[in-house]
Image (cartoon, rainbow, N blue to C red; front, side):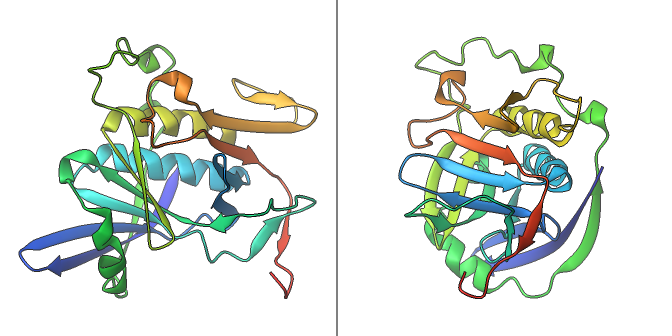
Amino acid sequence: MRLGVTEHRVRLGPDEYRVLRTTGLSRALCYDSEHWLDLWVDRAAAAELAAAWLLAARSPRSLVHLPLRRHEERPVGTALPEPYRARDLLLVHHSTQFPASRWKEVRGRLGQGSPHTVEFRRADFPSDSDRLVPGAHHAGFRDRLRLTTAADTLVLSGSALPFADAAADFLDLADTGPGRDRRMRRFDGHACAELHPASGLLDRTVPKVHVEYCPDWEPASNGA
């Protein structure tokens, strides 16, 4: 699968940041309500979401930016809850020690960037056996995702392990379709992937992350 990105280099004082910004995910919407984080995606966006999270796992020195909050398309027949706030996503390896408070300034200096295409094979994603994480529920486990919000962006930082694990779930969701249930939750026509605190891979700062497959989309109304 292919993921389009633009590469940007931003210097703030003595620090330089490499930002990889996705250019696809046209039918994707991310928001946070008062209870959890929600994303809606069609099949193509689910595959691109998977690729973006795997890219974050494979690029520990880069900030992976998914600019979703200004997307105008909405899932057909799905009402947004109130209150909600549309968000971007920023995926950061914790080894960069990137302060979320700097994101607004970094984003403001991105410029046009240089276009690239990232390619992954299905074999690049973790298999079911690879996704068993002994010790994830132990107090000393250090690989959990953490969440900070900055400049209308959900900044998720962690190790390669939870990023890659989530990427495999999103890839399974991309395979959702008639007669193709695979490992996804499916009931009454609803298909989704979830990052749940019970996995041991989410810090207390991260509520449940719910990604729902929506096959049909429409432009936003003029009042949206």
